[in-house]
Image (cartoon, rainbow, N blue to C red; front, side, top):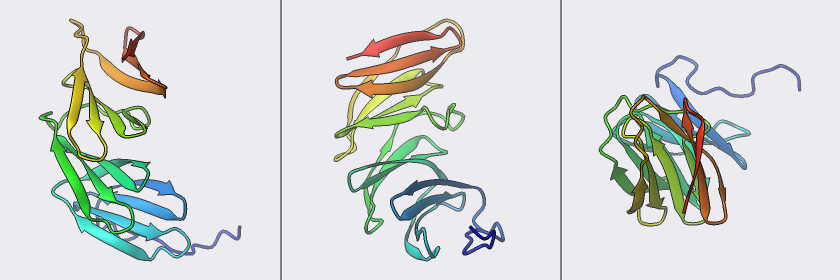
Length: 170
């Protein structure tokens, strides 16, 4: 380490706020201007970019698929090599849904689990097709938010705040 900047992205803030994920030798960036970028982590060179309709700000990778959560009410999947969009799913959640950065999304093989907190639901989505497999909700009369703690074989563990209830969902 020398303390010297070797590359930068969005130095002039022309793309707005950013969300990102670093995986292998690639940095995946979601920009407030609606683009998803794939950058070479060593050089900062743009490998591909894809225009979307909203701010993609949270990512997870499963196999060759980059899954993105948007500021709006949907998620989508991209091919990590080309940036082509595989699918897009509108979950019908208003734009004020609560997001906990590290705890809203996890995956297990071909299924992605996401917490849509204002709708008080957990969604299970097929990674390959984007089809909703099931939803789960345990309504509480007080305001509560779900976080996904981990996936253990066939049990999804859900933590409900502020009561700190833990559920195993099969």
